[in-house]
Image (tube, rainbow, N blue to C red; front, side, top):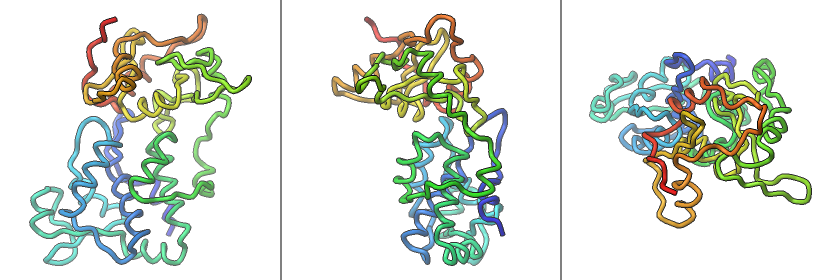
Length: 297
């Protein structure tokens, strides 16, 4: 059985690029727990808060109960659910899962495959990360679920997928004249820019192209906050700051909250700005909550 292909083809609700990372997040969490305790089961009532936190941090703005993937992942052949009455899930309701003592764990055939080939776990994690999350979040998400995914390619499955255009970084940084589009940071060591990155507005894993109309030159801090949904780009190419973000230090106020309503820095004249469709995707699928009002100057 090709577990990498099965991992890549988890059945998810999707429409016009809508993010639905609920099953991938549960599977990543289960792989992390398997790595620490290959025989353990995950009782829904005990892991519900962990799963809620993962969905809140790495899922879309519209909240979904973790009961949904806990029940439905079993249909993909990688997960099984049992209750006090025996095999099988009682349903996708929170009350049913709690009351029945529902537990879940990786499917028996998958557990056996992971014991035979321990490297499979890291390769499965890499597929899930590559398909559902931007690279800026891979490290912290892996840490959040207790995983250290393999950095190597995933083999034929990975080779068959769309390849990134390595020229994008230089094109985007040039378009924005090597300045962060949010704060104007332009640090260098000698002639080399440092701490500047090319961010995808519509994530590459969701069909975002490797071109300037889908790119922003951002400093490392603002790239991470952009991919976490703290920051966004609204109409008129003005910066959005989520009302859910809180920070009381001068640094948080100056580097994040004060950005609300500011126009982007760049791109330079003659270069295409972010395409409206990519901005709209990020606002609907990544940005969290409502934007703060513009900060008075």
